[in-house]
Each structure stands twice: as structure tokens, then as C-alpha cells.
Amino acid sequence: MTQHKQVSVRALRISDESEWRRLWTGYLEYYEAEVPEEVYASSFARLLGDDPQNFSGMIAVVDGTPVGLMHYLFHRHGWKVENVCYLQDLYTDPSVRGTGIGRALIEAVYAKADAAGAPSVYWLTQDFNHTARKLYDKVGRQTPFIKYQRP
Image (cartoon, rainbow, N blue to C red; front, side):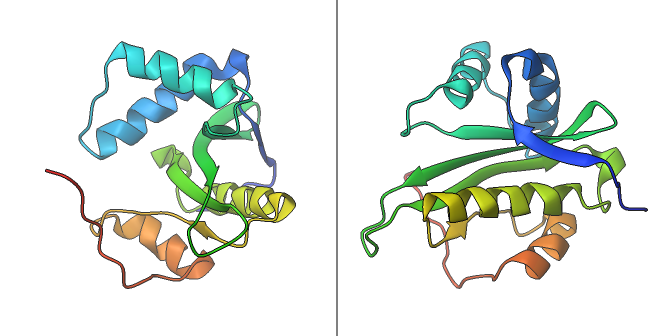
């Protein structure tokens, strides 16, 4: 695939709701997950809000069409004075994978972290997400941590 020359990554806007829903639904379907309507509504409202405790959202646009999304959060860390950045969701339309959209979204969150003085950006992915991991191996470093959660 060829790399898109006209990709822009910008903050999510209220007018992006329908395209954001389409993209986030694709993300959830990839992970065989569903959320109720109230989660769609509350998540979108939080992404647009100005509470620093909430997630922020960005969207990648090519030729006027949203083709990817990213949700991220700054939070305290017990081993650092500065906040760190957690990239929770990253998704690109299957039709544009391998064209630099995912990299552009990650570079955008790196820039947000740098501007906020956050020394680290981290994220999780499923071990079977081989396509994304090819990119992640280029733009990040895999850590030895294993995730546990309450059953």
C-alpha cells in the first residue's frame, strides 16, 4: 500500500460523532466487544470535555474522511513526578492499514505527551494483533509486563 500524503491528525470535534462511532464500533468489533449506547454517549462526551481526568480523542483524516481514531489519558504515576500518558484505543480503517495512519496517530500522541511534559507513553495490545504489532515494534519498545485483572 502507498503512504497517504494528506493525512492530518486533529482533536476530536462534536461534528465527528457519527464517524467516531463508526470507527470505534470497528475497533470494538475487532476485539469482539460491545458496549451499550450509554457508554458510546458518555465516552464521546468525556472525549470532548475539558476535565483533565478524562480521556482525550484525536482523529486521523485523509481527503476529508476520518480513517482512524485514538483515545489517550494523562495520569499520575507512583514512580515519577510528572504524569504519564496512556494510549487506550488506537484504530484505523482496514482499508488504510499499512499506509502510515497508525504511525501518524502514535506520533501525534507522542507530541501531546512531549508538550505536556509526560516522560512516557504506553499502551496495551492483544498478542494476536500481529498487524498492529509490526508498527508498534517500530515506534515503541515491548515491555515484559503481563496484565492481570479482577475476574
